[in-house]
Length: 290
Image 1 (tube, rainbow, N blue to C red):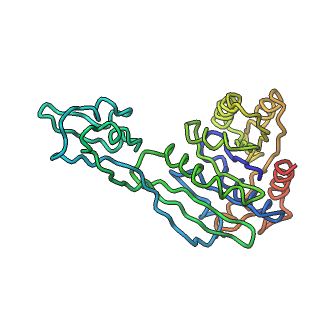
Image 2: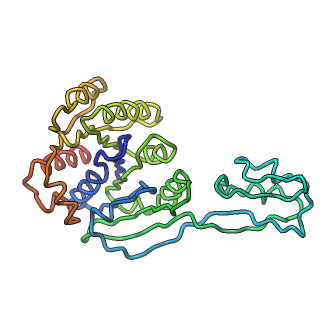
Image 3: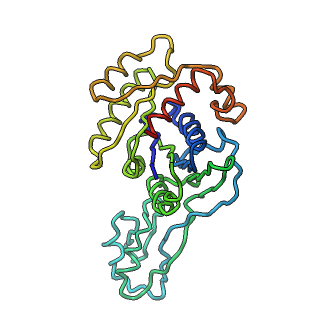
C-alpha cells in the first residue's frame, strides 16, 4: 500500500481537484481508496459522483455527573487536562463541552464513581464508491463542533486496517498546518504539495515545506503548480522554491475545462483525457506510483 497525501497549506489551491483526479487515474491501475480528511469542508462527493453506501455516526465521551454520588472532592476538576470542568462556589460542577477532548480522565479519577459515560456526536463517516476500483471515505465534522483535529485523527486511526486492502490510498488533506494535517502527513509515503502562483500561495507553500522538514520519516514530495499561467503569476518563484529543495515540479494550466468538470461532477481525466490539464495529472500519477 502506498499512501499519498495531497496537501499544501492554504485553501482554494485545488487540492480536492488534484486528489480526485489522481485517485481516478491510480484506480485504473489498481484498487484505490480516496479519503477526504478536510473534515470542516469535505467536497470530494461534490467533485465525484460516488455512490454513498453507508453513513456512520462518530461519537466521543462526555461526562455525565451524578450529583447524588458526587462527593464534591474536586478531583475531576483538578485533573481535567483541558479545564472543561469548573467547580463553582456552591460546589456545583460546570461542564464546557467545547473544551472537552473526551479523554475520560475525570471518570478514571473520580473516587465515588459519580462520573458516568455520556456520548456526544462529533460528525459522520461516509463510505461510497465510484466504478469498480475506486472507493471513497469522507470525514465530516458536525456543524458547530470545533474539533477538526480529533475528527481527522479518528478518521486515520479507525481506517488503518482498511488502508492495507488497497494498493493506493489518496488523502485529500485539510488546509493550514495544524495537528490534523500533521496526522495525515505522518501516514504518507508521498506528499503532493498543491500550490498556486499567487503571493499567498507562495507564502503558504514555504510554511508547508518547512513543516514537512520536521516530520521524522523521509517523504517523497512533488510540487504541483495549479492554475499555471495566471496573468502576473509567480510561477518562477514557486519553481525556484522547489529547486532549492530538489523537488520535481508539475504545472497544471489554468483552464475553463476544470470549471466544466466541477459542474458535471466528473473527473477531468475522464471528460477531457487529451487536455493539457489531464496530461499534467497523468504525470503526477506517474511520479507518485514510481
